Image (tube, rainbow, N blue to C red):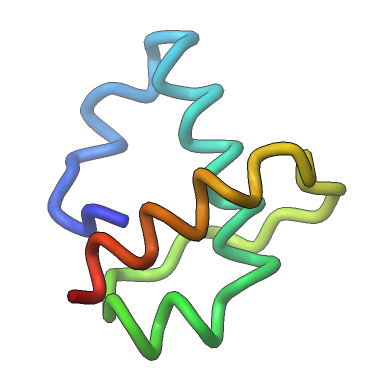
Length: 67
């Protein structure tokens, strides 16, 4: 949700790249909600399925940053 993190400076690390890909996937699925609540710079569009077991964590993060 943090639009200030310099992804491009750190994507050469495998852990950061994995986090970026996951964030881009979630952003693609919930773009309208994230843009409306958070207003962060957009991620690239990413296709694929989200892990529905992580929805609760995602909801908590959105709730935290939108307050």
